[in-house]
Image 1 (tube, rainbow, N blue to C red):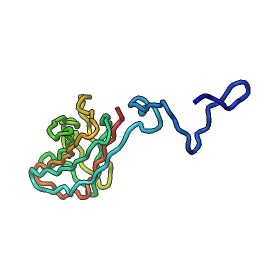
Image 2 (image 1 turned 60 degrees about the vertical axis):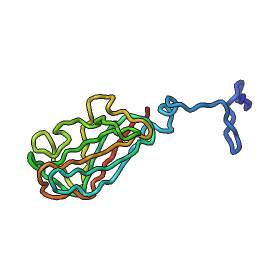
Image 3 (image 1 turned 180 degrees about the vertical axis):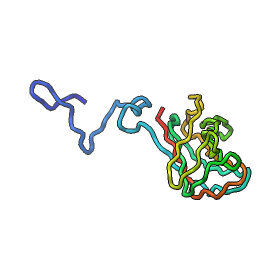
Image 4 (image 1 turned 60 degrees about the horizontal axis):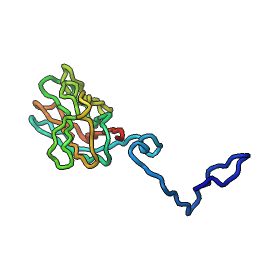
Length: 174
C-alpha cells in the first residue's frame, strides 16, 4: 500500500481503519520476540496438598503453549515447613516432551531444590520460593505442546502437610 497522505514534502503511512487489509506481512518467531506482542509467558498451576508420608510423590502437569526456554520456576504454599535433613521435600521438573517419554531434568538435582537444613531451605507460609534451574541450557528448552511434570517428593515424615501448593513457570519465547 503506497504512502498517500502528504506531510510537508514527504508522505506518511496510511492510517489503519476498520476494513483496512494488510497484505504481504509475515509474523515469524523473530518478529514475535522483538515485537510488543509477546516476549515470554508464564504458566501457573496449583497442585494437591503435599502429604507428610515417606516416598510420597505429588505431581502436577502443565503443557507449554509455545516454544521457549524456562527462565524461572517458583513455588508457594500456604503452610510453613521447617528445614530438616531427614524429613524434607525435593522439587523437580521433567520435560516429558509431546509424546510423554522425555526425561530432561529442568531443575538442578541439588539440595538447593529441597527443604533440607543443609543446602536447602525451609518453606515460609504464603511466600514465593525461587527454585534453582538446571545448568544445562538444552534442558530448559520446551517445544509447543511439551508436557512438563512438576514433582514434590517427600523423604522421611514431614512435620506437617503443605496445602494449596502453587507452581509458577516463566518462559522466554524462542
